[in-house]
Image (cartoon, rainbow, N blue to C red; front, side):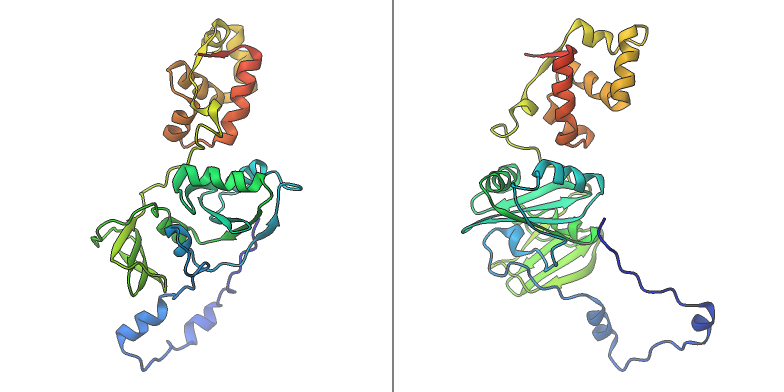
Length: 286
């Protein structure tokens, strides 16, 4: 777990006698002082996501494939609902992936965004790239989760969450309120609205072909969903309710990738189940 700092709580006596702080600043100036002005981690970066990532000291640094399995690391971050971004570098090649609740939700590389950029990070890591992980607050991670390959027309509404980019800098909005500014720019004005709930990126077919396949239930698999059979009890004891829901989805002709998108499940949790279902004869590839 990452260490979290917290200010010591004030005592009741302190609260009672401490006078409110006095300020000679005008109300607008006070408000400006309260809004953090962040520093860009990668100033001048070309990918939009990298350009607007704020500086954050690495919580994990120098990871590489020789001693850290990336899929195991991603699973660890998912289990701890981690917020932040991953940065992989190999020579002059780089890739960036944003995590929200421990889920990979947006990514960028030199010539790719989204799922392809996530695949690029994995490829770089397998080739020996060094990886670091930089924590962010949940609010900042949410704001950045909408950054993709293009900016949209900016329309500030009372519930707008996302990034407003301008030639003079960028503004982080959460539910219509400014929560931070960043001196990173676009040559034009545009917005990257954040989704209400960021969706998990799914690896491209070239890297996770199993996740895009369809599977048929065998007779044993159908028995595994029938509560009056002995097979059902065996299946339930081994895989529980998540396994039953996943098996039912496969029976309804959803691919694992489609099921992951609909149920917000992580592929690294589904992959061992698929392999186990195949090995024990509950499903077969179409």
